[in-house]
Amino acid sequence: MPKRDVHQRVRLLDCEFERVPLPQARVRVSWNDDREFLGEATEPADEATEDRPVLRAAAEATAAALSQASEGLVHLDVLAVKAVEGFDTVIVVVSLQSEVAGVTERLVGSCLIRGEPERGAVLAVLSGTNRLFGKVVNV
Image (cartoon, rainbow, N blue to C red; front, side, top):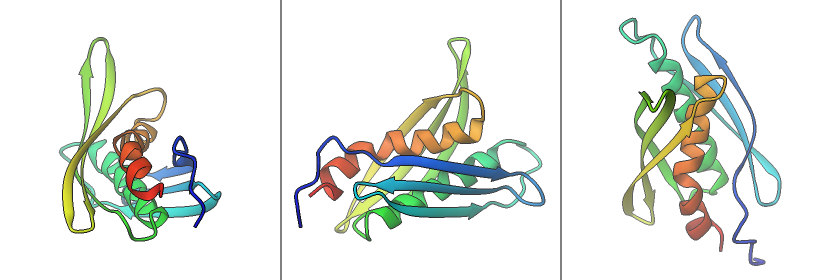
């Protein structure tokens, strides 16, 4: 297998979100050879926190797409997703757990929200995993 460019990153192609009837997300990414990977997730409605289920669905769909893109080398679990206010802005923070060859590692990604908070959750997952993909999948 040819050596891949170490600066190559997973590219976000598009993402779609729905809030009703249940929070759903579809995320499409590409990796190195421009093959596309689709991740989908549906979360149960949570009346106590209006935005949280759709943020989690966005993060889960992204993790699913990344696991596919790694061709089984990386398994990702979303542990938590939170929109945090601070410094006169809102940031989405995502906590993940990766498993590679039986070794687990905790990852954290964040993204300043510009536009859709759900897109921020997608970008936070990508932020938290880009180094992992660079060192594990980029061989």
